[in-house]
Length: 200
Image (cartoon, rainbow, N blue to C red):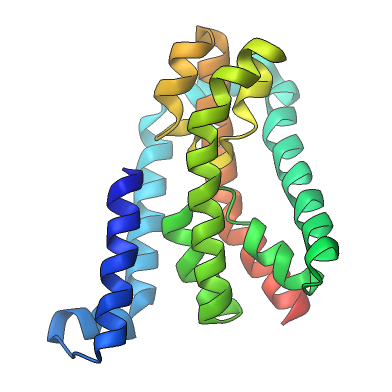
């Protein structure tokens, strides 16, 4: 998955630098909103198919929300700290980190809200988060606890990093991870739009 994403990014850069104009690709570039709608429709399908998520809301009540909202809060605080360390505008950093690891959506949205440069940083930031999740989940689950292992994954805990969580945690944590992924994924466009409207 990660290699395909990197290859697609590299191919897109080569295409952009070449100045070529291929009909369908140019159409998609000019109408990136349609790609966004398809992605959001896919998220809706994903949420609808996860019947266990709705069942566990009844089982765990408000406690099930602690993990995703803790991850969001930690991510935003981390973004603000990075903006101070790197001398970047805090608003731009908040928009970028609001991708929560969902690189395919955050790159498009941040490009629309801020700029193509910020969109590229958002894409790479979320992609790196996913890669680092694969590497850190086994260590975090051993060093701290199973629930903490959900944090690096953020929005990806319901799909791409879920196999790692299945392997290194237990059944209850996996259910929490799926719910966390659904909530984080739903919050990505909300947070990016919110901070975009607030600062830009």
